[in-house]
Length: 234
Ligand code: ADE
Image (cartoon, rainbow, N blue to C red; front, side):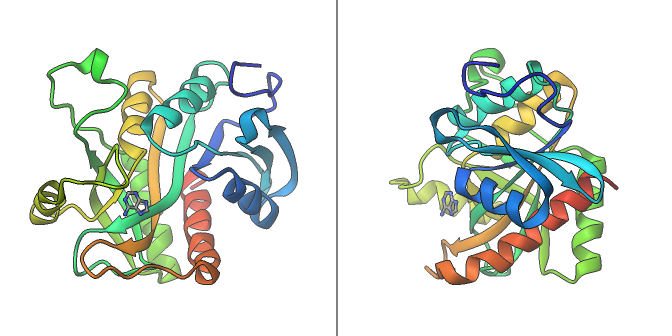
């Protein structure tokens, strides 16, 4: 047991999928895992362990933002021995060519700051995904025929951003989409020598204002979960 995860040693698999939303962790576990058991309810941040095609998997909510994700990822890696951590979540598109419902596989994540700032200080560190996972996820997405983009994303600290000029610079520099967690996940994985990736579904579009209606979210999010699972066990 840790401060934020009420699981027993051994309850958590080496492969962990991390949606921001704890209810999405429950939905993904009920939909994709066999024999899923709830292993965490502390603060309502639900986590489940079960099997997918015979492989043990944990799906643990991370909460929103890098500060929250950092707590769960640190405990999963340092206390529970997680070796592969894949964020599954939503993002806002920042390029015309990226459409709502498309998948983004994040090669890198740009940020203004992360909880690791205290360690990295003035260094403009480049948080990047595990290449093997990235490649496996891109292959899995291609095999499914899911419209998918692989490239850089932006991990923001603010959802209600009052600096539109910064988003414009992201678009100008080819950033595919914005979310709020991946950069710190990548930095922690690199620091602790484990594998990390973010597979994201585009839920809204910053350039067009389009947003995915809630009833259409499930199918798109399902593609993302399966791509993440296939990548983890390739
Ligand atoms: N997650 C989904 N859409 C987002 C957006 N527009 N900004 C930040 N995080 C998001």
